[in-house]
Amino acid sequence: MISIIIGIILLLIVLYIIGYFVKRKHFTYIDRLESWKIEIMNRPVLDEVSKIKQLTMAGETEEYFERWRVTWDSIVTEQLPSVEEALYEAEDLVEKYRFSKVKQVYTKIENALKEADVKIDEMVLNLREIVDSEEKNQEDMANIHEQYKKLKKELLAHRYAFGKASGKLEENLAHVNETIELVETETNNGNYLTARAIVLDLNKDIELLKVKMETIPLYLNECHHVIPNQLKEIKNGMEEMIEEGYQLEHLGIELEIHKIGEMVQSYVQYVENGDIDGIDDGLKAIKEQIEIMYQLLEEEVSSRKFVLSNRPHIEKSLEDVTTTNETLKGEVELVKETYHLSTEDVDLLNELQDKISTLKKMSELLLKEEALSTAAYSVVKDKVEDILEMIKDIEEKQQTLTESLQALRKDEFEAREKITHLKKRFQETARKVERSNIPGIPKEIETLFIEAHHAIQDALTSLEEKPLRMPLVQDSLQKAEGHVDEIYKKVEEMIENVYFIEKVIQYGNRYRKKYPQIHKRLDIAEEAFRRYDYTSALEEAAAAVEAVEPGAIKKIEEMINEEINQEN
Image 1: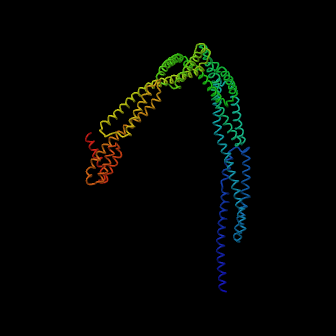
Image 2: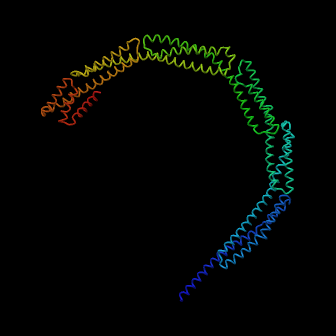
């Protein structure tokens, strides 16, 4: 029983402690809400509102001030007192441990304080907007007054520079002046925000008017003087060129001048009405077109110079290629008696003759005085460039054909030199065999000698044919050279082998008495040697010696190399 009582007491103590801390937490939050309420009450709203009292209390300012007064009174006399009552209610609920109910009161208090904060922020924002508008309006209007005076003075001092546009500019200045007066009226009536909007628009109007007064004199000068003078200069230049014999109708410059004149007149009307949008781009386009016209006329002048300077060159070049072609014809006829010419070379010569005839007719029709007096030089220049290019092509092909004919003679000379060289080498190879004192020549070598001799004779025969077919000559020479090279290498190899065989047999003779088998094999090698089968002889003798003395063949090779070095 006692333990139950103790447990109950302990439970009550725990519940009391928990309740204490929960209440403490709630009272802390209530204190925060109270501080929030005091902060709102202490906000310097009245100080801010006092600033607006320095302005004209009329119109928008008076309306805003009255609205703010009502709002502030509502906050002070209604919202904040209701918050105070709700705070007392919250404290009472916390004391009674009605925590769930107190949360609803918290929500009510928070909403009221937030609403009050928002209203005050909006009041201060609107108030500062009006005060700032009044300050900015004063600054901007001081600048606007100054700009207005400068622009009006500029128009009066240089009215002539604006031409008929001066009337429109005066209207714009009058509108600016009216707007300035409207700003002053709205300001005097307390409508500072409305006045601010008008001032911003007025700034834009002033800037636009400044741009107009800076550019209109420039545009009018371009339209009345610069462009007309350039067009006149082009017209005068065309007249002088026509008198000198130029044909300019194809350029269409007169029509373009007329179009530009109409465009300039329309731009003048726009500018005089104060409308400058797109004028700058339009004048730039006109200037570019005028520059193109200058370039077209300059091109005609340079084209004439090019045509007249190249006319004698073309005449001379056509005479030269005609003479060259006639010379080539004679050379081809002579060469055909000795050499076989390809069909392509003969056809090329005929083709060149046709092209030369065509160019002569073309240049005669194009470059004679009658033709030049009625043609545009820029058009003639293009055709002259084509003629020069075709003459260059003809000259290059004539040069190619000349080199081809010269190459035939050169190839024949080189072929005869090569045959002489092959015959000499063939004879040197034969004498080398004779001087070598070898027992005899294998059948294979004899056959190679015969084939090489026949190949040289075939090459010589092909070189004596009329007309000479150089491709056939080159082919036979290549074959002959191959045969002579082969017999030369084979003879060299044969002589070296014969000498080597002799050395091997001599070296092996020292083992004949001691090794009967070696004696027998060396006899077989000697027998093959006498039959001119030098390959078999070398194989048999080398095998015999290596059988009794491994490495002997290498030793013999070193001895032979040493002898050769001593001889050299």
